Length: 149
Image (cartoon, rainbow, N blue to C red; front, top):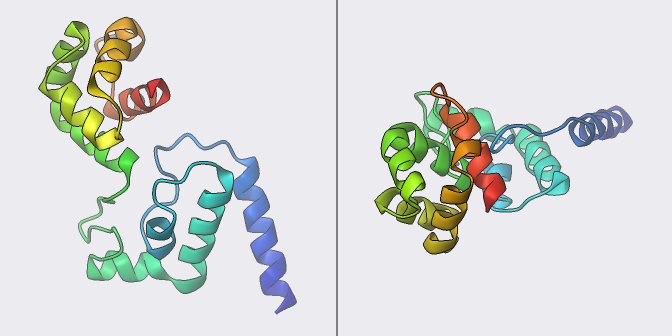
């Protein structure tokens, strides 16, 4: 039992010390669902620990439950939904972001639970940051948008 606790502590320390660059670094599973919407290291550590201890990610992937898609795409969570939306709407979002308003701004604001006028203004003011070059990828764009809000 002491080895289990020691392993958990080491794992938690590694998770806490590693910078989180992913939109949602805990994946899917019961722990990810329980702490969905929370920010910071502690909720991520708790989610990952819960997922690992109870094997809920494996079960979720196999059964298509707990926020998992059996085809390999992780679903659920604000960051994941924003990423999925931007992957499919990058061109239209670029046009709307340049204008500071539009349907994609409204939809993304709804996903992120922020005011669409504020998001539109921030997207317009930071357009050159969001779309620094022609090869912007959806993950980078999602991270930049989420940093704005």
